[in-house]
Length: 371
Image (cartoon, rainbow, N blue to C red):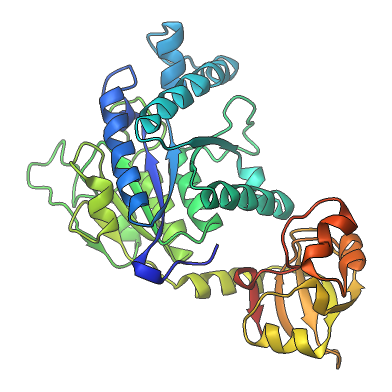
């Protein structure tokens, strides 16, 4: 997704922890959820795109089934997540419904974001949801997830989502005002760190554990998420969920919580990622397409002459001119079989030729690096 420059609009990912959603109790707090929804709606009305990563499924399941504690057995925790996810989504649907805003449930695992095809499918789905003015509510698919594909906590999941969408800002709401020089629960002289230009070993050493025991992620996981997101070009704010207008203040650059500076621009971070991936396919393009690609425009199927090396949807492929020189690399929206069918054809012919339409281009400009 391209960053939105007009009117300083942003793509913002908001992660809300269990302790924030329950207001420190064992039940979901409708009042707290309403406060969060109200801020998201207000920012949407200003033109921003908002994505919500919501914890709380297991807590909702415990509430629904009358469990007084979280069981240790994985199948029982998966059961609680399965029951609680519907309860959690119903709660979000109700609070956003008060503002006539539609929500959509998106359940992800690490495997969805590591496999290139599933990565593209997830991103395409989220882009479609956002373009239709719907708020995606994302959670890890705890009901079916295994250790091998588990993200492990929604802090890191929110960073992966921010990377997926090239988000401008990630706001992590928690039960602490931010990162401190020491544990504020034990050291009365602990000071809030308002700005972190770079996450160093000394900064990591400041992280502690969870406060309430209700969630799975403490400050350590939030720092991991911040490091992942900032390396991808996303600014991060960790703030207390109980603070009034915390999301709006973070979006407006107000001094709230701890703000982590992005370590690279979105283009630089994405360029490093694409260039670091193995090239698994290649196409040759005509002169017009070569000029368009050199001007950082999307590669349309009409400009593709032939497939040189077979590839799958989501693979990094090389774009070569008529002289055989590599002029760009990017993420293919179609596999090589489909590309052969649509090569030289207009974008509005794709659905007729294939029976479906992922996108009007073979490689989107946002997914391409000009060499």
